[in-house]
Amino acid sequence: MTPVLRRRLEPTVFLVVAIVVLSVVIRDDQYWLDASVMLAIFSMFALSAGMSYGQAGIPSIATGAFGAVGAYSSAILTMRLGMSPALTLVVAALVPAVIAYPLAKSVTRLSPLPLSLATFAFSGAFEIGIRGGGQLTGGFVGISGIPPLAVAPTPQAMHVLAWAIVAVTVFVCTNLIRSPYGRAINTARHDPLRATADGVNVSQLLAGFFSFSASIASVGGWLYAHYVSYLSPESLNTATAISALLMAVVGGAQTILGPIIGATVLTLVNNFLPATQAQGMVYGAALVIVLILAPQGLTGLGRLPWLQRRGARRTLRPISQP
Amino acid sequence: LIYPLAEFVIRGVLLGMTYGVLALPIALLFVTTDAVDMAVGGYAVLAAAVVVTIAGPLGIAAAIVAAVVTSALTATIALKINRPGLGDSMTGVLATYGLATCLESFVLTTKGPDPMTRQSFGALWDLGGIRVDPQVGINITVGLSALAVLAVLLFRTPYGRSMRVSALNPMGAALAGIPVWWVWFSTYIIGGGLAGIAGVLIVHTTGTIYSVGLPLTLSSFAAAVLFGLQGPARAFMGGIVMGLIESLSSGLLPGAWGSSVPLLFIFVVLASGRASKQAIVGARA
Image (cartoon, rainbow over all chains, first blue to last red):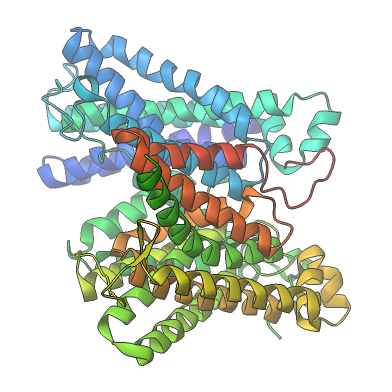
């Protein structure tokens, strides 16, 4: 196997092995099977955030909105028009891409912080739109009774299907990032002027990649709708998007598997926290501690100065506290 | 139509004063450190909770102290991650989001989900048939005073000069002997103090609940960038405009439009590239 092929396959193989081990460990445990499916769904959201922020430098807070587009479009089409979920998957993947492209064209030229707040505002307005959607979206009440997927009638089958979708997504993302297209994305992220000089249409490239990341979130939303079978304006919202971005950053947004690792850590933290009003204090504190200890994400721990050889340390040190 | 419209305008100006006071530190911090303290709105809510708990001037002082102490904690953590000269500031911003989550949960745990409010005046002023809360006068006085003090600090003192130099070129400022880390740290503290004042004004004006911290930060950021980031006066004016838009849209527009128009306005403001710190040709705005 050539080094290039190995680099392109490594993340997917690692993930598949981890899923096989996980499947053997949890087997018929209903609680952990449910947690595993939800983790797979949130891994899709985190992958979407990781692609847009980690690879293209677009810290989007609209991941939840794109997830909601996929979830609501599939729910409406299956329940109102009787379409098959297999067909609605195609719609769910395409519609957010069409919405995301012009959005990205208007905001990707901004620096990261205003950009994230602009997508936050977009996401908030979209959430209000769902609430005011009347019969179509079910308004405040939402939509219940969304049919489950026929190909995954049992929790075990849903667990396998959800993680298979995550593995395929990881494979596609890895190959995209390792391709000339992916290298152009990385260049546009770090030095847009250089990318322009190289003949890259930065705005178009980033908008296209943002659309791709929106589709990933939307497929996650499609899974969510057919697994949970109920949707409301609070199901997939700005809080979901912020969680997805945090998952990507905590795991390591610039790596392919980092967002999935971040999703695993934060989902486990959430699952083991008591469901009380004080939950936010523990969650927030855990988040701050992880970001202090591993600002590059958990997958970046190996790059910390004290874990590197002396000669490999950076020469330009940041300005520190006197 | 005139009287309800005038009431919406007055209500908007009242709301805008608090946005303006919060927009001042947000603009200052963004220009100085290229970061946003997502917990700024949380300090205001914390200050409101303290004012509701402790009555009188002691409560007001305790509220501002609580906001300043919390902002010092945020500054220590954010600057540990986002040190001057290090580059990407997003991780530090996300850490301040973690602290905002902590603050929200703390206020929910200690004060519960009910609205927090405190009335200073029993009777309303009657100005030509329009009933006005005397709190308006206090808000305007406090808001303009904060603006004046900050403008003098920024443009008439050596500290302000250090702050502006640290914003322009942190590495160069450090080489010139300016304590950039402390300048950045103090910017967070100023933000905490002003957010504390805003919290005191909010609780005496419209009241608040535990969960408004993040929306307050978002609206104040949009206010800060609305007229450009060239000075505190523009940030303050942006706050007034944001308050007016929120008040008029919620009062005059039906249903969901009333809530979504301010968000769409924020989106348009940000997408227009007004938050550009450095207008470098070819760079991302």
